[in-house]
Image (cartoon, rainbow, N blue to C red; front, side, top):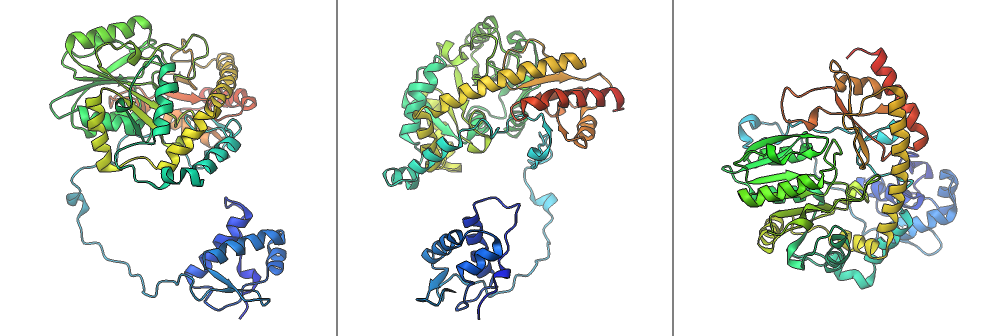
Length: 487
């Protein structure tokens, strides 16, 4: 029996190359049992004509299937489903009847926390003022692909396949130690650094190692919502500290605090930069009262008006500061690569904890990033992003002022977003829902605050993912909705 070409259909919305999509459809049909062993596949010419693609594309897809033993070639008679192809399961799946009372069986609950929601199809919106997503027009696809191919090559076979146990890719560690940290004024040795799955994983590791139910964690309010959830799960005592135009105020830290979590470069979400006087005061108080500091060096690369301030870690003379860095925001969020820098005693415990949970971040991702960094592509990307963000920021600031909107922190000097304040009576959750119908995405500010009675009239506008020529029009739509709507 010859399988009709019409049985192979490509979804025009599906990602991937034509070759890979054809290969997936045929493999899927074999695995599901629709194509059976011994059946003849449509000829490459017939399938190419049916799909409207070149014959070589079909031939290459068949060649991949042949190498994986999904199909077999029989001389001049064509391709057939291989007798050795994976076979579909022969048992019938049945739906079990739940008898477990999960309301009692679950020992700890992790759902229900306030979260920042981003629609999966955010790219389909015309005015996506959302934070932390990659702009494909700025990213260097070719260089990342080149780095990935090098990481997948024979020379890097061990880096890709080896189980590092609790260690990290030495090339990535070396680059961070010799190039990344010195730019922040930080000197460290290899036993003082740990690669993590992004900054959020680094914050979790720090909280797990440093906090107990008897200790107190001070943190900024408003703050990065996942950090507050991490601290809540640690069951420590929580001490939110309000921030102003200069970030966290050291004098407001409760006297019994054990750990202080802070984002001095660009406070999340207000983008405030902590002045040098406050940084010195924070370090001085930490030494006097014997508490530790976890510094999330959030968006330090994006400083547009003033010179980049030194990291707290670079000013630390007592080993009290634990530094959190990340490549996920500056490269792309799906990368999930960050790092912790601290004393060898702390890093040893964090490394042991990481090993029990995930052993280490994937070697191939670490090596790909190491190549991308060491070949200079990362620095070029940061310069390109900096120029684009600076230009977008000027357009957005001018648009905000022209439309009469209110910046909650008009002194911002960098970052990739604006922290905004609507009139007191406005609920920005309702505002965001209404704007979404007009293809505008904003981030309501409520999840950033700790207090249940926190104000509902704050929101964040990011410019990292929106084309510059759409900013003014999008800001205009927000202003019009605020003038005309009732929230």
